Image (cartoon, rainbow, N blue to C red; front, side):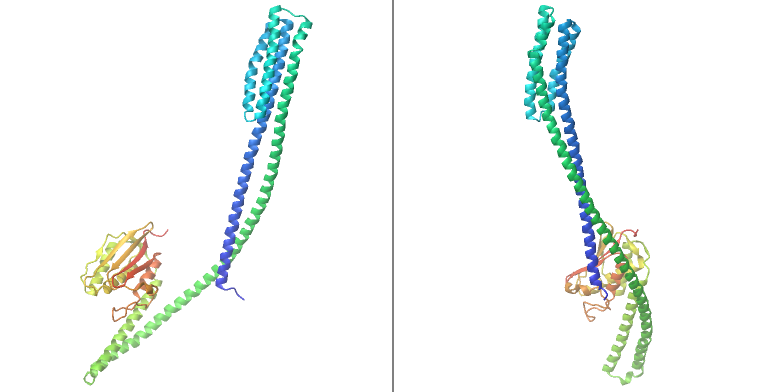
Length: 465
């Protein structure tokens, strides 16, 4: 059982929706994975900075302890030798220690516990420096020490303070190493979760992309099938149109002969038997002749409508002001009116001069015809330029029509007024619509009975690329 066009259309719409949804979700996942990856990289960079910061704190603590040891060594050298070089080196080392402790405070400004430890560390450092200074001052008072006195100066409180400094430094380093371990664990956990996110996210995104790709291939296949059907239908329609054109030509040609015969024999009958016909007979013969002429006009209009679809569009720039004036002169001549046309300056358009002339002829002739029963007729044409088109407007103050019957307005042989009210075959607007559509434009209307009718049609400003 073949699938109906409606079912096939619904399936194609569903497939298109699923394809867009799959591509959208895949894109969303890729964006999310990119965000997670970026966030992880940022956290890794931040963790690296924290690790480096921790190493700097440890290095700075070691540096202070090392300098205090060097200060103690240079003090001992000075006490033993009395050489001023040791004393100069000693003071140079002590001058750096306050800066190093200040740097250490700056590195631990966000850690209250470490700041307290640094207070203790700095206090011990000051005591150690004071102890070292006492030995130097004592040497200056006595000029020389023996070995036992030197051992007493560098031992005792000095050694105890150095041990306390090392212990305090080790405690501070232990805190930093603990922080380092915690940060390393956090980085490892984050790296693991990021890997899982990237792995499963990419797998899901790949699955969605493959599904969307499969749906796209399926849609392409359906579109190819639909395209082949369209081409087949187009070929059939072209063949049918040619057959209809041939048929309409044959019918019109075959009908013209009997119509001419009806009209001719009616006239001959009236002339030959005029003395035997009463008024009713002559009236009936007149009806026959008028009806045959009307039938001939319908055939001509039908052929004109048919030919309008086959005639190629020879597009070029058209001076709409000159064209409207030319058409209006012909309309006034055929309708025997001297009605002035209200016309604004009309911008040029791109189209077929002859076909556009037919459109204007139909619209302006209708405007004159349907406003002919007004005491003061008004017919005007204006234009408005849009981005890539020009919209022309033909307005009259005629009888108008009921918008409820708008769907019949552009139909072939569709009339919204009886022939007794206004003559015509009902083909003019259908021809106008076909011409405008073939130019890539639009035509539409609005009206209010016994007040106005407005016809708008659009044309391209430039030639199609």
